[in-house]
Length: 115
Image (cartoon, rainbow, N blue to C red; front, side):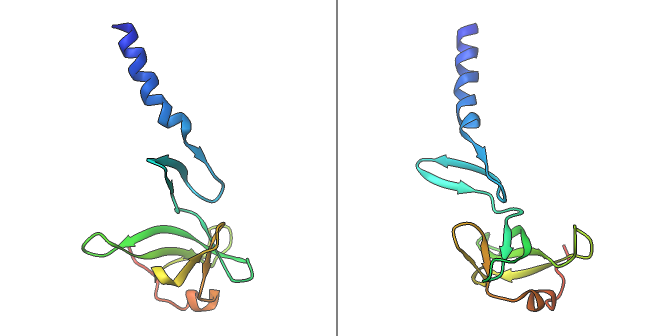
């Protein structure tokens, strides 16, 4: 019985031990050769690479399909920032960060997202 429990624990520990965290993103996992990574708190930058915010969440429509991003923009050290929503095509992935197609001023001019 002890061997069965030990085998079960080691079997479950394998996927957990295989996960690693990356700076700027969440847990990295590879299931069935598919690369998965959380985008929560991932940087949003300008085309010049200047950080202008972070992704807070992915927003879905009423059918559960991803429809946009909730971004935290502006402020300093978490003070004075606001949450705004943008459509999925407002950001482009460059391999290290999400690049905004909008300027910081355009993002700050959007109506705040009220959860």
